[in-house]
Every structure is written in C-alpha cells, then in structure tokens.
Image (cartoon, rainbow, N blue to C red; front, side, top):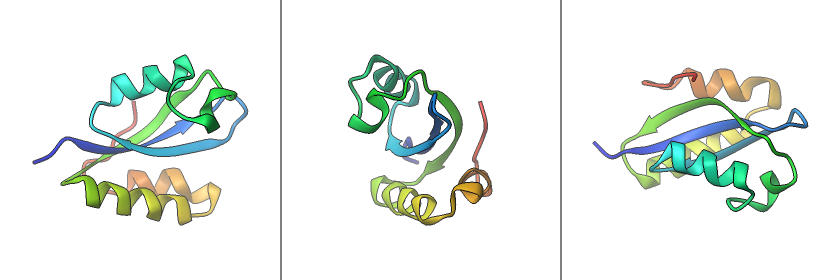
Length: 88
C-alpha cells in the first residue's frame, strides 16, 4: 500500500485548504513556513483538520478533487467518511 494521503487544513482566517502528500508532517511544516502554496502563504498558522490514506497518487488526486467539489460545510465530514480517515 502506498503512503499517499489527502489532507484538509484549517487556515488562520477560517478557510479550508485541501492537498495531497506522501509526508504529512513535512508538508504541514512547509505550509506553515510559507513555502508550500501561494494560498496558504498568507493564511498561517495552519492546523491539520483531517487526513485520509489513498492507494496511489491517482486515487489521492481524485479524492482531493471530490473533497474540493463539496460545499464548505461538508468537506470535513466527507473526508472523514473515507476508509482510514483520521483527525489529529
């Protein structure tokens, strides 16, 4: 099984950010350092809201897209409904 994960971050302004990674701790550190994405650069500090495993990169990208298509109020519940999903 691959170690790809889809993650959902809560930004300091209350918005949500969704992404994929193979190393969740490293990626969260990059986001909080301001080197990971343009969106999160100005919205630090960030906190991990939830993450879910994926079999491979393609599956992770499809799940990320499915999360992003959800209304804001449903994003967290949708991701947590995935098999193996967890909150920090």
